[in-house]
Length: 123
Image (tube, rainbow, N blue to C red; front, side, top):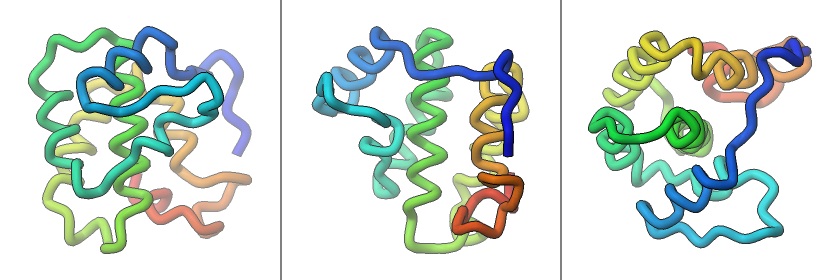
């Protein structure tokens, strides 16, 4: 799926360092995708709680949502088994202007949600 360039968004360096400090992640200058590298299905509740608590910048919320979506992507159980998924969808809906790039990205690469993306059909 081609995402219009005006919707592109990438993690900001300050947000990477801020969330690294908050969650005990180790940032590296060689990291290409911290949102994927830091994804952890066992920390989904923690990520949602931090997002919902407020006090995060727009860049931090963008990155944290990307980490959260990747955590669901890498989980070993279906989305229907995660009560947190409905809360995540509510947050995406509430803050869609901030997360439209992520929603389109996870909706399925190359125009098809059936190309290995677990959450694509459910976003």
